[in-house]
Image (tube, rainbow, N blue to C red; front, side, top):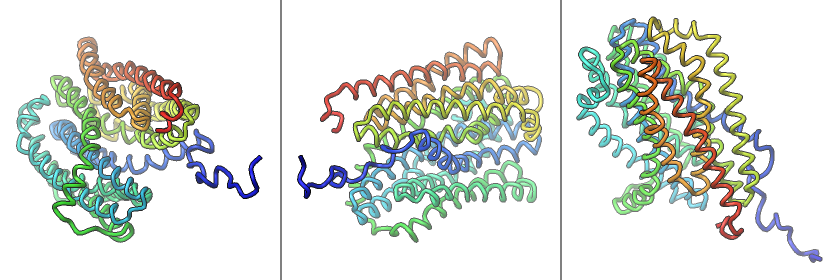
Length: 461
């Protein structure tokens, strides 16, 4: 019998983390829905851009934005990888209640993100011609693509700074201000695009400068709340910059490697669809930008399920880890089904909105139905990657992501393009995702089973 003075176990250890108690499905739904707003704002910037460009009814200009998207996606993914590293080390310092250390790491992390963003963007900018040629653009379309990229990439370092700042805001638990960073960027673009493209008659150049203005707004909206509400910034010294740089490098390497797998896969698809002409590239560009906006909740699910898996795994509740993963799978199936239904019903008006005709219209219709349904299996991959990262298996996540966008993309896209042409490229990309989605889910449950079978001290460690 315990004595009257003995403290209850919960009082000694503290209350259980929020995700170790309560309804897992509710946690999955609420976190996914709230996180999706910021993500959809990021992706809506590209969608708004191509929407206005499509109103020029110039297939060359629309195709140019399509080719450019593969390059911009690559550089943006590099920035997202950097933001993951910076926000991770800042969050760790905040968790240790080291406010000064968190402020220093945030300052140095933002500085490094901007510097690396400038270097990386400059390196890509210097070889734009060969890159565009590798993507398959030719003639006037290639010239328009290089022109658009040479202007729009000037603001990429600012976008990387803004994305990193938004990550630091999330580390401070300021989800609303983090979300508004990209929301205000989308608002700025929606206002600037018609003014510069149509009002001033700048066309494609106007779209590029509007994108740069949007990135400036994103950077400003990230830096301002950090200065005003999160303790400001620290004085920078070379020694501390080197220390924090090394701490971030161990996380940034795998994070960047994982992030760039998707744009590399998209570049393969762009190259395969290029021989079918500007109409095919325009259709691919429209569907590629519709996907993350229409399915932003599924993209956000990866960030939502991670903390739930991590907290329950840390508490030794592997039964709740399994339940959380299955709840995420069910949630994905419901969302995909509802979104596909809406897109299928509205496929005509959506195609009309982009002035899509011929092959471009066929690809938009293909997406608003079968391809959207197949995205369920990409959702399985997102869930599995997030779970692996929070179960101490980040390399498996990287391996799955690269496998999906190489072995799960190129052979199938080549195979089906020989049967159905341009439509076959996108069908093959979707079919490859079916295989890797199923395999990834099976592997993550193997990881959970092995941790459940491990001795209790090992699981807690």
